[in-house]
Image (cartoon, rainbow, N blue to C red; front, side, top):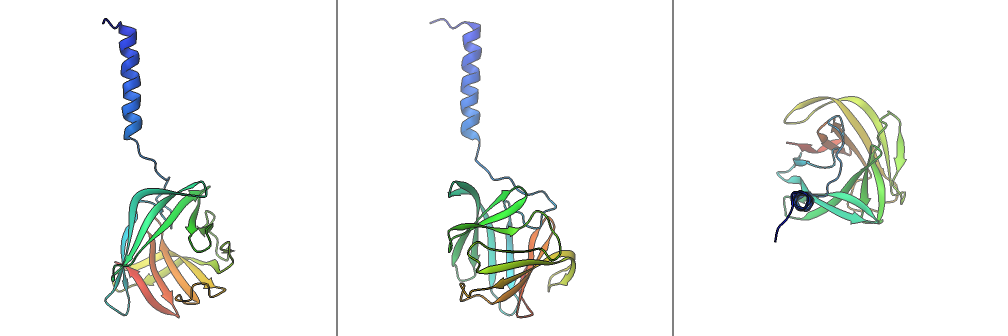
Length: 190
């Protein structure tokens, strides 16, 4: 069988397209390096302040679809081995997460950052507010400045094992640095 030059080029293009298509991976767009809440590529270890326990956040490099939306999957694992998967995606610069308890998508970090900006999750169980964009914080391992501080208030006691109020500190390009509950440092990034 004789293949002419045009057919050979066409076959090479088709085979190359198939190979390139098979080698690509579906991914979620990450927020730029100035983000306070990166949604992919995040691997971090947090220590509980008062005890020798840890929480690990690991990007699983996996996509999960919920209600027709693709989410980046992050695993949160504590020192005892308990694992939870959390789902995040970027929508018009806003960081959204899928809340398994209410089976709804919720805003976790707005694109437009402004002190005093408030929002509630869809089932109205939590309210969030940005209370500072230039905070300083010293953890047992490092001093930070220019942090975003977000207050999270539980409105309905839906999450009985959680406190009623948290202050979460975020650094641009890094994400979460520390959490305070009842006025005390609870966890901090190592």
